[in-house]
Image (cartoon, rainbow, N blue to C red):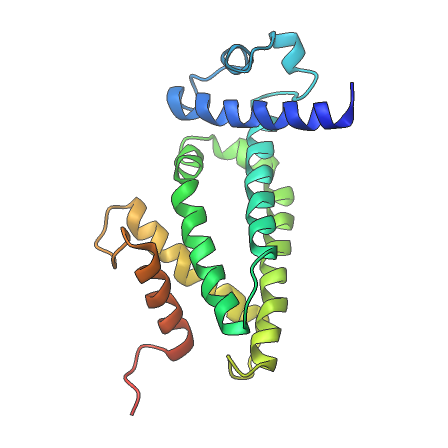
Length: 196
């Protein structure tokens, strides 16, 4: 089988698996369900994935790869790229809310098995953002400080807003991504105190 065919087929299975997990839940979804939804036999599915956990990691990996690809194509001035990055992250959370909901129902032992892989992927993403923060410092968009601290802080602002939405707590204009982007960026760049 050609590599392109295998890659395309894996992507289809990943998409279908997320749909099945979303519809049936982590516990009730079976590889048989995923195989049927993907137009495959269960033995054929095993040619691509060993088990549900393998599929879950592939879903996460695919989602992070998509985010990285989108972020790598952001262009403009440093400040414009920063704004586009925040908007991209907010859109990422909105688009992938079903994936985040899925994690709430996955056994913690399963997540522990993939913890090192996930940690490595997330560290890579944050390190890439820290490199961009270095560019922001150089271009005087940010004052000199630790680029990693800036990266973690910005991700923290975005994540906390997303968590507020998941918990249905009051938050700032989550229904307007552009306005939310500007508010997060303003807080990140200017702080909370009024300028004198």
